[in-house]
Image (cartoon, rainbow, N blue to C red; front, side, top):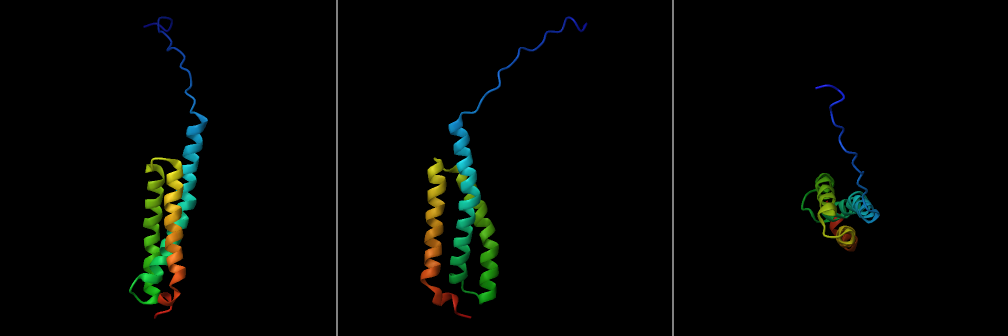
Length: 111
């Protein structure tokens, strides 16, 4: 075929993503990073108080488990039905876990 006989592909319009969708994805990303971190921190504090190990083992185990909690929170942020639910549910759970850890400091004082 000669170069003059080829037909050019029709020009395609670039699809634009609506601003509402961009904001929702941004909120979910923020929830995955920031609220996920808060949930990991709250679960670390909670597990440090309630795990039945020696103090150093409780801290190490809670610190290692917090990475799995953070990953689960990030997955939930993008799986939730709405962006508000992606923020509020993990945030309330983080506050509850941290509140329990603060309410019972005598458990953390055991050897």
